Image (cartoon, rainbow, N blue to C red; front, side, top):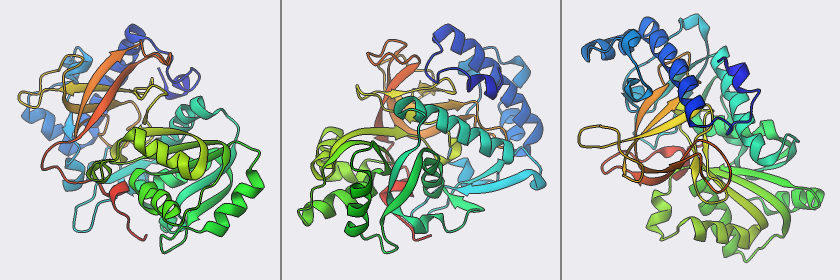
Amino acid sequence: MSLDKFHEIEPYSLSKDKKEEILFSELKELTQKHYESCPQYKNILDMQNIKPSEITKKENIPYIPVRLFKEYELKSVQDDEIFKTMTSSGTSGQAVSKIFLSKENTLSQTKTLTHIISSFIGKQRLPLLLLDTEMVKKDRSMFSARGAGIIGFTTFGRNTTYALNENMEIDIDKIEQFFTEHGNETILMFGYTYMIWQFVVKQLEKRNIHFNIKNGILFHIGGWKKLKAEAVDALEYNKRIQGVLGNVKVYNYYGMAEQLGSVFVECEHGHMHCSNYSDVIIRNPKDFSVAEFGEKGLIQLLSVLPVSYPGHSLLTEDEGIILGEDDCPCGRKGKYFKILGRIKNAEIRGCSDTYEKR
């Protein structure tokens, strides 16, 4: 099934058996492609005596630790086919992942993100308030996950406005003007979890400023480690956002630079969802066996999007639990799960917890 065919159906419409058949076929094909095209990936599989042609089920699709992208330049295309090089947003002193994107891969990421997010907000372009600084777009050829997220969300917006200036200070006058112009419309907002908390919510509360959005939608992404340190959970986070901004639906979502595009959006019932493009497997950290639903373990992410680099099956440094499949009260098909946090001693991702002036 080509990605064009994926884009013709609703992103949460495939039930277990049909999705299993399609995903396995696509992932096995990608494994063979990367085995033939990426020498380092071939070495990894050869050392484990894994032959792509002999893989018989999805759970046996080989995975690689996401950290390898910080240590090696993994790519399955020639240098002249590289359209963009994306980096993860590491904190100061950390190594960053480098993701090599062909034009085909870049386009498929954009189309897929559009397909997934549009299923939540509709296909119309909405007035867009980005809760970040425009400086993040500085270099379009070598761009970070944070910059990619910002640029990606402009697809859904019009009259795009940035809420923070170049010094990461909230621009009250600009925000007020934006809300005055679009007060009677549905307003779309996007930002990174901790940055929204630190530079928007807390600053508005400090100044005792409260806006009254009539109909807003906010998507946010990023780690919760620093928020947990402040004893802030999702319910408190959403409540405080609504306290300073007004009537806003808040959607958290999960994703990473190494699999940009195939994001996992939290539904109205607080469950992270796999779309048709992706799947999740939980692995026991002791022996890496597949955990049962309800058992916590390491999150393995599967995606049909990475064609220019071997990122289709990744073992993350996050813990989670699969809650169910095809039976979430929200009506969306596919597995749904909960993220429990980072494993002990793992590096903090820098995308949301810190910022760099780029």
